[in-house]
Image (cartoon, rainbow, N blue to C red; front, side):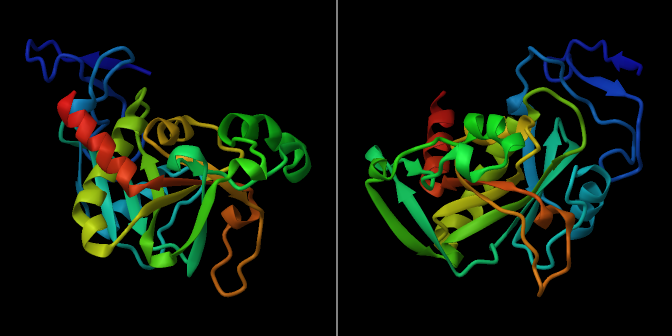
Length: 257
């Protein structure tokens, strides 16, 4: 694979790289977007803005590793941009649940549901489970509550169409900050939710944990008799939650950094 480095003295363009285009999705319609190599700061060059459903759908179709279509009803689609170039998409929707139990440990931190990894998960998932899921005892849960489904919003699709170290973390931070600012207080949203396929141990899991998300449990393979059958429902999935207040706090800290 070849790449070209732009030889400009502008500080905002000095680390741009271009690679050979690989597809004709909205990200690559005009060639491969610029990316930054490992070791250079770039988070300030990552932005998000709403994009049309058709654009988001085309990105997922071309680049999502295991969910190449969109839910039928969504709140907003965010286009992720690096230095103005479209590089990914994140889609939010209300989850298909009426209520959810939230557990807490000391200090008001989210707690996972009590599980025994060796007993409750298949052997091939146990190494990953020990990295993403805290194995706690029931007596470590000091409080819980049942919240209505409309106080949670699901990041139903998170997808990047370029390879770029640490972009997932920066994109998620910008997107969740924008979503919380635009929707959370107005709609009474308290938690963000997302699911990650359990055998997919990639950069997104690291990004979620880095940006205040907690793995609170898992979902077993299931069949949905009233919805279109999809392969993802036949997979184990990690469930991640993030309190909206955590997003607000991170945003405040970042603004003072």
